Image (cartoon, rainbow, N blue to C red; front, side, top):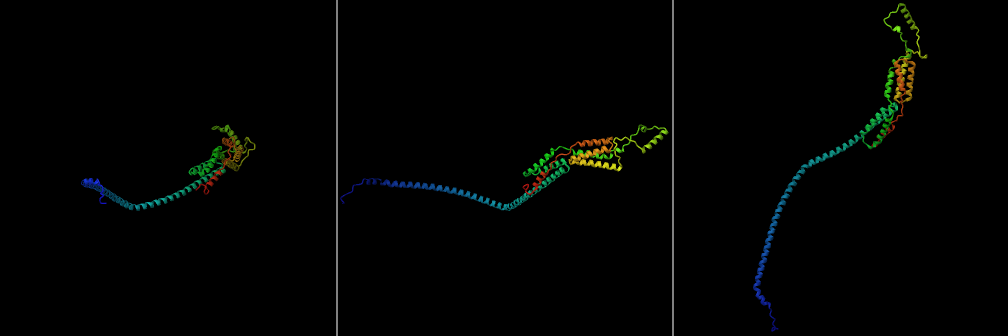
Length: 346
């Protein structure tokens, strides 16, 4: 076993040759590694230092910002504390204003409803007046004026629910405008003029014979016997008068009869005037015919004033005063319906 020797290894000689260099190389490599680590440590330390400085700077800036924000927050808090009483006061005033606004709205609504009620009451009264004018006197112009005034009142209430009322009202206005015009005022004035002249109209029984030409010559003194004969004839003439009568049945009226004749004639003319105002053609014409007959029978037709009165009555007799007048009952019903509860959505 001992005689057998292992073959020689060729590396032993190489290792022995390289050993002195290997130690140096390891040392150099170690030094290089140490230098490299030192450099890295120095670089890391420098970087860390820079990071610390930067962080310190940023922390300082952050602290300054925090302090500034704290100051601002403190100032804001103080201002909020100062504003809290004012805010409470403003909230109280706003609440009062809202309550006042609600109260004012309610008051306005109430006033608006009352105003509409007042206007509708005025419209109803005007329509009643127009209806009375048409039914009692037949005065178309007065009725038309009343309805137009009612329409002006309704223009102040701008509500769609009153549209039907205004339509009915305007239909009545159009019907009254379409009626033929009758000058009842002119007729009344002319009849009043005739009635005022009745007291001065001479009666046929009061006529006197005209004076002769001999009686009308002044400044001539007839002879004595002629004057005596003239005086005697005048005295006899007072006792017995002979006169020409155009109508043999001429009535002789006493003063009382003449007075009542004139008063009755005035009443006839007044009745004719009322007939014209009420559009009653029958009454109007019968009164004028009767008045004309009385003038022809009892008054002196040769007198100019009697002739003027007869001509006036003749002209008035030919005037037609009657017309089919509408009534405003439909408009009156519409107004009352509008005034009913909930009629105008009040």
